Length: 105
Image 1 (tube, rainbow, N blue to C red):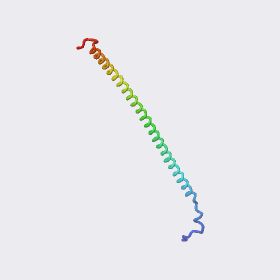
Image 2: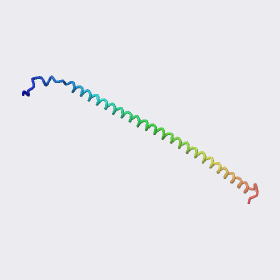
Image 3: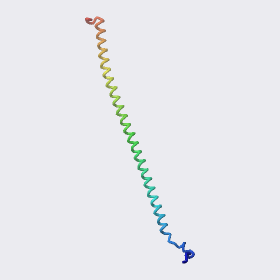
Image 4: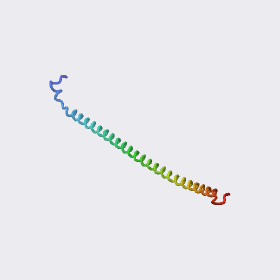
């Protein structure tokens, strides 16, 4: 048996299968890369949307709290004013009574 190959026979092999495999591998890598990048882009967009939503929510909540405190202070001011006016009127009446404007008890 002759185990020797004729000269040049190894060079004449069909390498198209190997080239096809390389192209398929390149295509696979490209698709995976695009999926990864697009996933990262989606995640980044979701994070940005979440951050913006949180910012808007916090701003709205802060505005609600500010309005509530404002209303509280206005109502408290009205209550104090009514109480103080009643007290001032009472003291004015007592002073008038003491100055001889009426019968003092």
